[in-house]
Length: 352
Image 1 (cartoon, one colour):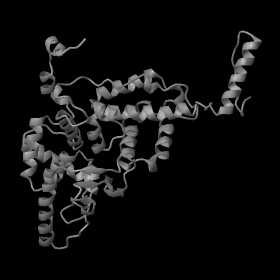
Image 2 (tube, rainbow, N blue to C red; image 1 turned 120 degrees about the vertical axis):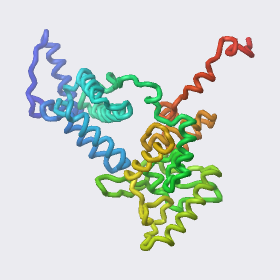
Image 3 (tube, rainbow, N blue to C red; image 1 turned 120 degrees about the horizontal axis):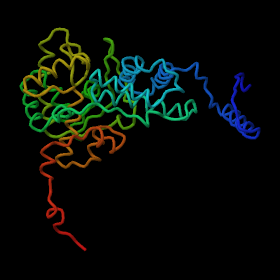
Image 4 (cartoon, one colour; image 1 turned 180 degrees about the horizontal axis):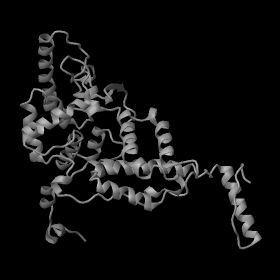
């Protein structure tokens, strides 16, 4: 017995049996043996998420907990963690395809499994990370449905709708800066530096179950200074004037000091913005995008105009340029057409 557990098996010789026994003892010493009858996928992921709850943005925890509850647990939650196979993950993603779950949501499910199983592998709870073997394969959709960002024409129409709408300033600012929804809701006038033309990201707002949570950005890259264009500063100037007029007109105005507030001056609930986004898309005559699509649009339009990806990545608060390019860069149809070069064009100015 090793640490109170009994093992059995066959070996071709006494020497091989002794080697196998030595390996089991070494594994037990390292803590590499986990009883497969006690740890399920749901149990492990629940514990793993709870252990990282305080070190991550609340919104990130909320998204991952939801992925576990809605998609992972019903399909593979009762599987023993050590018995989890590539076939199990393939079945999981096939079931998500049948539910018509979007590519972005499937990537979230996969990222949760990939990261958590990597940790399990480091702790020697499992012997391999099956999420490195199997990835989601959502069905291909029409190109217009695949775009996570507005096209330049759609963005122009959406911007015009924002400027004609009394609640459009928030969305114009988000489109012009690429900031996250919770970051924009958390901004205060004290964070704005007109001389430097910047705004500091110091707080972020999340809205879960009707409860507003105010917290500091969790990562060094998220705690950043965002540079503002002259057009965006003009937007804020107009918005501040309207806000001052509203404060005088409304009895019981509660000044929260926030740049963007609810109707009574308090902190704006991020979840309430979806209705405005739907209305603005309809007014603009463009397809509906989630609010996060404005962040994708900012990144894609900026890169299309030739702004260095390093600059865009810093503005967005990303940790790496590679993440910006792989997750936020939409290559538009017009770009591909414009760069369809013949061999003569490619070889022009050749040397050597």
